[in-house]
Length: 362
Image: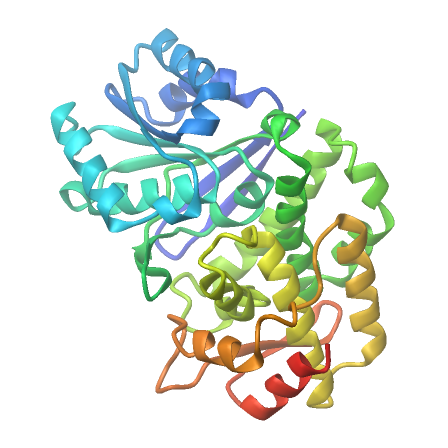
């Protein structure tokens, strides 16, 4: 069973190929979709490559794609300009040119960094995303955002650069720790919460079925999220307006990651907490009924995600970190505030005092 989602852009489009055991077909798919490719270079991390590296390299070799590879130490803290520079050196050492294809194999950290390297090496070379985590499969591999972190904030150095295609193999999720699956589910729930009530209800009503990681169920889930995100990207590719809605939960979530030096929360865990406090802020402003917040908290808790900012983190710390967000414009931060399930607004018209109040009400 396989499914293809098209990401349609103003000047281009590319497919997301979702299926099971796709990794073994990577070489054939590259040959079919990118027939001029001869040289390939794989960027992965030390954890993922240990499990899936041989499978991908063998597939590339079987299709005469001459693969080389280098590895990134696992962890968000390694998504930085220093490691990007090391990969530039690796690409030069392996004599990769503008006709070469860069392949990312891993989660969001690897995909973001490899995409950034592809976008900037020799002013841009082709690349393919092979996301191996649920979070990357439903979110970070879709839409062309590539970046590295800066000490002042997450993803501050980046651009928009789309892959030739995304190859998703749901069988890679079988080896993920439960916490990583939970983290990815935060982004899935986000898509339903702001974009599609029916999709949210589907997640809510089929959670036990989805948790068994059966390939057909996972393909259905990924299909839903990729279609929803693809529609948003089509309307606003460069995040000049409507695409900001996908930042629901992220502004507060990124603040928590910065405050804790990226060591206490997985990205999806921080986003889950951020979504709850966006909803609480919306309720404080008279936009959202509290029953919706109860439903969200119940769903996130069933998934195994946190929903509270711990008391050791103070409201002033959160506000200070938010002010460093890359989405700041003229010292105003847009917040995504739900009005109902499947309906949200983007607004700068919120008060520090209201956000401090909902944080302090813990």
